[in-house]
Length: 489
Ligand code: GLN
Image (cartoon, rainbow, N blue to C red):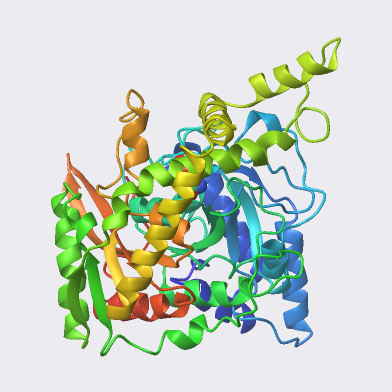
């Protein structure tokens, strides 16, 4: 049989519509690939059993001559903090090990409505806290480009699933970089929207003022089609915005006349020759297409990590209070209520989550609220103001997605603060609510491995579509050189 996984999701869907291949064959192929290779990668925590049935439904619709959406029949991977009715939704935590979703997230319902087929739930750092997927309570996920390295995190399973070629599309969540950084480490596109463009209803909350659903793909057109499907207002999420998605439309716009600004504060941080070469490459390529480049300083970014980890932990301490062993989550049964609750939480959460709950509770406590939490909110405002000023001069800002490519397992285990500092280029967007995309823009040869490098493009509030214009222009000009399935490591 010919390979049913065509180069892109859109092409696959087109062949399904023209009945060159069935949706069932495509989904079966994805399962076969996962069976054959996910033992070594570890991208998935569970399969979606109903996927083949859903595929049959789509094949039947096509047979009846019904009109279907541009991605109908395409398999997708879902991060395990997205609810899909009847599936386990663990958020990478022991405390939700046995939790089955009684309902689906709005984004998941939109996928199903568009005929996109969830085939599995992917590994993640526990409650989306980490940068390497090593903090999953269940398993490690390996980077398809080099099995001795992390895929990034916290949406590491989703990035690995796309990079390994198991699926052409995946959803993740991004609270401080968790879609963009794993996308950069695994050589895929990774998009985080303006706060409010994609519904969070049915998404396990980490830090609600920072959390957004994001998407991963191997082509800009695929990514745009996916974003067109899942974005938009949701009456069930009061923070979602009434803005119509026009991502596919934006692919055609190009970058002629666009003004790009490197953020000075992040240029010195990259200690990787691959990152520096990629920063230079995007300039040369985009200038060749009629864009201009400059530099700008955003001084408040110096405090971004400090502000982020105060706000993030404060919101985590509040959001995770619901896992009490009573309503949600696994219970440790003891003779009295208090010890049952404290043991359920003490044993159910891993060390990183416990640490963040303690830090966040401390930052919010009456004696320290002014010193920490309220100061962090002021810094957040200063960062947003710096960005607003920068966007008076530039249309798109540019940084590395990460200061370095994928690191080895355990490399940061003795220095947790160093892992937090690795988020330096991504967290500011969540603090300011801005959209960002990580675009694969180079490879670095490190100890015998060719590792992907991602460059981050940042848009102003509601400048989401513009980022797809940039990504498509760069992809076309470089003939998709940096996109695709990872060569077998
Ligand atoms: N690495 C960051 C953190 O640990 C971001 C995580 C995320 O985006 N979910 O909080």
